[in-house]
Image (cartoon, one colour):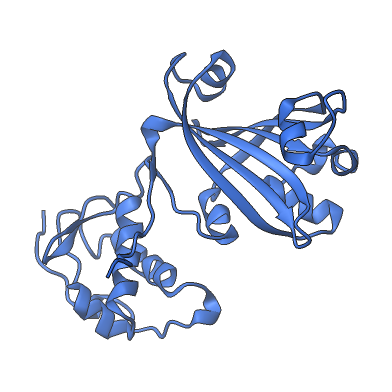
Length: 256
Protein backbone atom coordinates (compact mmCIF):
# COMPACT_ATOMS: atom_id res chain seq x y z
CA UNK A 1 0.00 0.00 0.00
CA UNK A 2 1.31 3.44 -0.94
CA UNK A 3 1.64 5.63 2.15
CA UNK A 4 3.40 8.53 0.41
CA UNK A 5 2.07 12.04 0.96
CA UNK A 6 0.31 13.40 -2.16
CA UNK A 7 1.23 16.92 -3.17
CA UNK A 8 -1.22 19.80 -3.25
CA UNK A 9 -0.85 19.73 -7.04
CA UNK A 10 -2.97 16.59 -6.99
CA UNK A 11 -5.92 18.91 -6.34
CA UNK A 12 -7.44 21.17 -9.01
CA UNK A 13 -6.91 24.88 -8.49
CA UNK A 14 -10.46 26.19 -8.40
CA UNK A 15 -12.02 29.43 -7.20
CA UNK A 16 -14.85 28.81 -4.74
CA UNK A 17 -17.75 31.26 -4.73
CA UNK A 18 -20.53 31.73 -2.19
CA UNK A 19 -23.07 31.91 -5.02
CA UNK A 20 -22.57 28.16 -5.42
CA UNK A 21 -23.44 27.35 -1.82
CA UNK A 22 -21.42 27.00 1.41
CA UNK A 23 -17.68 27.07 0.71
CA UNK A 24 -16.96 24.10 3.00
CA UNK A 25 -19.44 21.94 1.10
CA UNK A 26 -17.85 22.87 -2.25
CA UNK A 27 -14.43 22.06 -0.86
CA UNK A 28 -15.60 18.73 0.57
CA UNK A 29 -17.00 17.78 -2.85
CA UNK A 30 -13.67 18.63 -4.52
CA UNK A 31 -11.76 16.48 -2.02
CA UNK A 32 -14.13 13.53 -2.43
CA UNK A 33 -13.12 13.02 -6.07
CA UNK A 34 -9.39 12.30 -5.55
CA UNK A 35 -10.27 10.16 -2.51
CA UNK A 36 -12.79 8.19 -4.55
CA UNK A 37 -10.50 7.60 -7.54
CA UNK A 38 -7.50 6.65 -5.41
CA UNK A 39 -5.34 9.72 -6.09
CA UNK A 40 -5.30 10.03 -2.30
CA UNK A 41 -5.01 6.32 -1.42
CA UNK A 42 -6.47 4.63 1.63
CA UNK A 43 -3.85 4.85 4.37
CA UNK A 44 -2.26 7.94 2.82
CA UNK A 45 -2.43 11.47 4.11
CA UNK A 46 -4.27 14.49 2.76
CA UNK A 47 -2.26 17.72 2.36
CA UNK A 48 -1.99 19.84 5.51
CA UNK A 49 -4.99 22.00 6.39
CA UNK A 50 -3.01 25.22 5.94
CA UNK A 51 -1.80 24.07 2.50
CA UNK A 52 -5.38 23.28 1.39
CA UNK A 53 -6.59 26.66 2.68
CA UNK A 54 -3.87 28.52 0.76
CA UNK A 55 -4.43 26.49 -2.42
CA UNK A 56 -8.14 27.32 -2.58
CA UNK A 57 -7.99 30.77 -0.98
CA UNK A 58 -10.29 29.90 1.91
CA UNK A 59 -10.03 30.08 5.70
CA UNK A 60 -8.84 27.29 7.98
CA UNK A 61 -12.35 27.20 9.44
CA UNK A 62 -13.73 26.35 5.98
CA UNK A 63 -11.13 23.60 5.52
CA UNK A 64 -11.84 22.10 8.94
CA UNK A 65 -15.59 22.05 8.33
CA UNK A 66 -15.04 20.33 4.96
CA UNK A 67 -12.83 17.73 6.63
CA UNK A 68 -15.46 17.17 9.34
CA UNK A 69 -17.95 16.37 6.58
CA UNK A 70 -15.54 13.87 5.03
CA UNK A 71 -14.88 12.32 8.43
CA UNK A 72 -18.63 12.03 9.08
CA UNK A 73 -18.88 10.13 5.77
CA UNK A 74 -16.18 7.71 6.93
CA UNK A 75 -13.71 8.81 4.23
CA UNK A 76 -10.97 10.25 6.45
CA UNK A 77 -9.76 10.31 10.05
CA UNK A 78 -8.67 13.67 11.43
CA UNK A 79 -5.62 13.81 13.72
CA UNK A 80 -4.46 16.47 16.12
CA UNK A 81 -1.58 18.54 14.67
CA UNK A 82 -1.19 16.07 11.78
CA UNK A 83 -2.73 15.76 8.29
CA UNK A 84 -5.91 13.73 7.99
CA UNK A 85 -5.59 10.09 6.89
CA UNK A 86 -7.77 8.56 4.16
CA UNK A 87 -9.74 5.61 5.59
CA UNK A 88 -12.05 4.65 2.70
CA UNK A 89 -12.72 5.48 -0.94
CA UNK A 90 -16.50 5.50 -0.54
CA UNK A 91 -18.79 6.61 2.32
CA UNK A 92 -19.58 4.19 5.12
CA UNK A 93 -23.13 3.34 6.20
CA UNK A 94 -22.89 5.67 9.21
CA UNK A 95 -25.24 8.61 8.88
CA UNK A 96 -24.76 12.09 10.29
CA UNK A 97 -27.31 14.63 11.42
CA UNK A 98 -26.00 18.00 10.21
CA UNK A 99 -29.20 19.92 9.52
CA UNK A 100 -28.69 23.68 9.58
CA UNK A 101 -31.00 24.49 6.65
CA UNK A 102 -33.32 22.89 4.12
CA UNK A 103 -30.37 22.22 1.78
CA UNK A 104 -28.88 19.92 4.44
CA UNK A 105 -32.18 18.02 4.55
CA UNK A 106 -31.99 17.54 0.79
CA UNK A 107 -28.39 16.31 1.06
CA UNK A 108 -29.42 13.82 3.76
CA UNK A 109 -31.90 12.15 1.39
CA UNK A 110 -29.48 11.84 -1.57
CA UNK A 111 -29.87 8.41 -3.26
CA UNK A 112 -32.79 7.56 -0.92
CA UNK A 113 -36.24 6.22 -1.79
CA UNK A 114 -39.52 7.01 -0.01
CA UNK A 115 -42.01 4.14 0.21
CA UNK A 116 -45.51 5.31 1.11
CA UNK A 117 -47.38 2.79 3.28
CA UNK A 118 -50.65 4.69 3.76
CA UNK A 119 -52.32 8.11 3.55
CA UNK A 120 -55.67 8.62 5.26
CA UNK A 121 -57.69 10.66 7.75
CA UNK A 122 -56.96 9.89 11.41
CA UNK A 123 -57.66 11.13 14.92
CA UNK A 124 -54.54 11.86 16.97
CA UNK A 125 -53.49 13.97 19.96
CA UNK A 126 -50.61 15.14 17.73
CA UNK A 127 -53.12 17.07 15.60
CA UNK A 128 -54.55 18.79 18.66
CA UNK A 129 -51.11 19.70 19.97
CA UNK A 130 -49.56 21.09 16.79
CA UNK A 131 -52.52 22.35 14.77
CA UNK A 132 -54.94 23.44 17.50
CA UNK A 133 -57.62 20.98 16.39
CA UNK A 134 -60.48 19.58 18.47
CA UNK A 135 -60.34 16.13 20.07
CA UNK A 136 -62.90 14.70 17.64
CA UNK A 137 -61.52 16.48 14.57
CA UNK A 138 -59.59 14.26 12.15
CA UNK A 139 -56.57 15.34 10.16
CA UNK A 140 -54.48 13.51 7.59
CA UNK A 141 -51.60 11.12 8.28
CA UNK A 142 -48.94 9.87 5.86
CA UNK A 143 -46.95 6.80 6.88
CA UNK A 144 -43.77 6.02 4.96
CA UNK A 145 -40.30 4.47 5.14
CA UNK A 146 -37.10 6.09 3.85
CA UNK A 147 -34.44 3.68 2.52
CA UNK A 148 -31.10 3.64 0.75
CA UNK A 149 -30.77 0.36 -1.10
CA UNK A 150 -31.52 -2.40 1.39
CA UNK A 151 -30.86 -0.16 4.39
CA UNK A 152 -33.93 1.29 6.06
CA UNK A 153 -33.00 4.80 7.12
CA UNK A 154 -36.16 6.11 8.79
CA UNK A 155 -39.77 5.37 9.62
CA UNK A 156 -41.66 8.62 8.98
CA UNK A 157 -45.12 9.59 10.23
CA UNK A 158 -46.38 12.92 8.87
CA UNK A 159 -49.49 14.84 9.96
CA UNK A 160 -51.44 17.58 8.15
CA UNK A 161 -54.42 19.73 9.23
CA UNK A 162 -57.67 18.87 7.37
CA UNK A 163 -57.65 21.69 4.80
CA UNK A 164 -54.02 20.98 3.83
CA UNK A 165 -54.29 17.19 3.84
CA UNK A 166 -57.49 17.18 1.76
CA UNK A 167 -55.61 18.86 -1.09
CA UNK A 168 -52.98 16.10 -1.25
CA UNK A 169 -53.35 12.57 -2.62
CA UNK A 170 -51.18 9.54 -1.88
CA UNK A 171 -49.61 9.66 -5.34
CA UNK A 172 -48.62 13.31 -4.83
CA UNK A 173 -45.86 12.25 -2.41
CA UNK A 174 -43.43 11.39 -5.21
CA UNK A 175 -40.51 13.40 -3.84
CA UNK A 176 -38.23 11.77 -1.26
CA UNK A 177 -38.64 15.00 0.75
CA UNK A 178 -42.25 15.19 1.92
CA UNK A 179 -42.18 18.95 2.51
CA UNK A 180 -41.01 19.49 -1.06
CA UNK A 181 -44.01 17.53 -2.40
CA UNK A 182 -46.29 19.73 -0.29
CA UNK A 183 -44.70 22.90 -1.62
CA UNK A 184 -44.98 21.70 -5.21
CA UNK A 185 -48.60 20.55 -5.15
CA UNK A 186 -50.00 23.32 -2.95
CA UNK A 187 -47.97 26.19 -4.41
CA UNK A 188 -46.73 27.42 -1.04
CA UNK A 189 -43.35 27.86 0.58
CA UNK A 190 -42.44 26.38 3.96
CA UNK A 191 -40.27 28.98 5.66
CA UNK A 192 -38.86 27.19 8.71
CA UNK A 193 -38.70 23.80 10.40
CA UNK A 194 -38.63 23.60 14.21
CA UNK A 195 -36.63 20.50 15.14
CA UNK A 196 -36.78 18.40 18.32
CA UNK A 197 -34.52 15.35 18.81
CA UNK A 198 -35.19 12.68 21.42
CA UNK A 199 -34.23 9.10 22.28
CA UNK A 200 -36.89 6.38 22.22
CA UNK A 201 -37.16 2.60 22.09
CA UNK A 202 -38.68 0.72 19.16
CA UNK A 203 -42.26 -0.57 19.47
CA UNK A 204 -43.50 -3.39 17.23
CA UNK A 205 -44.36 -1.14 14.28
CA UNK A 206 -41.04 0.74 14.37
CA UNK A 207 -39.04 -2.47 14.79
CA UNK A 208 -40.80 -4.02 11.78
CA UNK A 209 -40.35 -0.95 9.56
CA UNK A 210 -36.67 -0.47 10.41
CA UNK A 211 -35.68 -4.12 10.72
CA UNK A 212 -34.38 -3.71 14.28
CA UNK A 213 -35.05 -5.46 17.59
CA UNK A 214 -38.17 -4.72 19.58
CA UNK A 215 -37.14 -2.33 22.37
CA UNK A 216 -33.98 -1.33 20.50
CA UNK A 217 -32.69 2.28 20.62
CA UNK A 218 -34.20 4.79 18.20
CA UNK A 219 -33.24 8.38 17.41
CA UNK A 220 -36.48 10.30 16.92
CA UNK A 221 -36.51 13.62 15.07
CA UNK A 222 -39.66 15.77 15.13
CA UNK A 223 -40.05 18.58 12.59
CA UNK A 224 -42.81 21.18 12.64
CA UNK A 225 -42.86 23.01 9.30
CA UNK A 226 -44.35 26.49 9.16
CA UNK A 227 -45.10 28.94 6.37
CA UNK A 228 -43.89 32.56 6.31
CA UNK A 229 -47.02 33.67 8.22
CA UNK A 230 -46.10 31.16 10.99
CA UNK A 231 -48.96 28.80 10.19
CA UNK A 232 -48.16 25.15 10.97
CA UNK A 233 -48.49 23.15 7.73
CA UNK A 234 -46.81 19.80 8.40
CA UNK A 235 -45.55 17.84 11.40
CA UNK A 236 -43.22 14.90 10.71
CA UNK A 237 -41.84 12.32 13.13
CA UNK A 238 -38.82 10.43 11.73
CA UNK A 239 -37.52 7.47 13.71
CA UNK A 240 -34.00 6.30 12.85
CA UNK A 241 -31.99 3.20 13.89
CA UNK A 242 -29.71 4.62 16.57
CA UNK A 243 -26.81 2.28 15.87
CA UNK A 244 -26.19 3.72 12.38
CA UNK A 245 -26.77 7.34 13.28
CA UNK A 246 -24.77 10.16 14.83
CA UNK A 247 -25.43 13.83 15.52
CA UNK A 248 -22.78 16.32 14.34
CA UNK A 249 -22.84 20.07 14.95
CA UNK A 250 -20.52 22.98 15.69
CA UNK A 251 -20.36 24.39 19.23
CA UNK A 252 -18.44 27.68 19.17
CA UNK A 253 -16.95 28.89 22.45
CA UNK A 254 -18.88 32.08 23.24
CA UNK A 255 -17.74 32.26 26.85
CA UNK A 256 -15.47 35.16 27.77
